[in-house]
Image 1 (tube, helix red, strand yellow):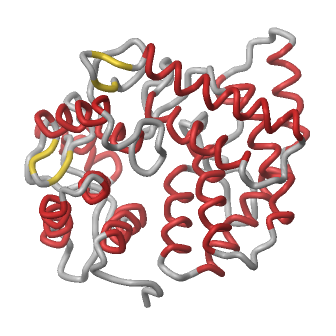
Image 2 (cartoon, rainbow, N blue to C red):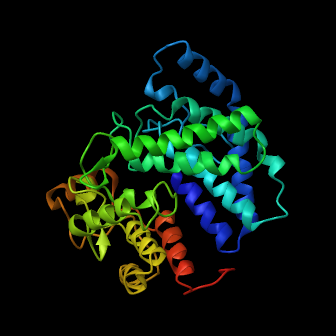
Length: 330
């Protein structure tokens, strides 16, 4: 249920693999419906004022047969539940013959869950910083709730609640998530994080051409981007390298606002950093922010993950956006 898997599914549909995307979205629905009692209980406990431990919320990782992954993980990640609603709506727009009724229960459960818990501090995109409300987490919640209201599957009262919360999310970010004319990593903070790009494209919390988004991109360009893109300045994970998926996300923004030469340059950088077999890794080590930290991570978990499906999905998304490839991609 992570944002990664939802973005991969969105790419699969855009790339012409509708059946694969359909299977994933049906799986998401089944996972949610199987946890309807748990969702009801969490909402009831929260409204009663009970404290809910961070590991009691819905998980971020499930097995292919819909079971929760048993290993310890940073599970309370709300962004995936918003991203799946956004991605599902995009899939249905591109697949008119797909029946929205098949997803009705899963959509309603997700919407109820997000309406109840969107204000909760959670882990961010990088499975870190659980004590904050993250701007780039709120963006897919906003997009997902809006997308759900357009599917015509929600009861009227729930639809109106979703619209109201989406508006509240945007107002909250613009009032508490801005610093010096740009977006901040979390509400009340001032740090820059490359995941903030997604607040413009694809999630539309802020228009990509809005001065707030322009200021955010400028801050990312001046601190985190030089071909590749770092996550944030204090990153020590595997030495804090540059992430191809973030290079593609920045390129997607450039393409959206008409900076096509720069968008093509991002795509070229990613190609240059593919392996001889064409694999794209999680990150590359050309410009490490914390090189002394790299050996410790390699000893702990082995080499940097490669290939990383998310990196490939974002690369293909940018290539499709630029017309370098067309669907269906084989």
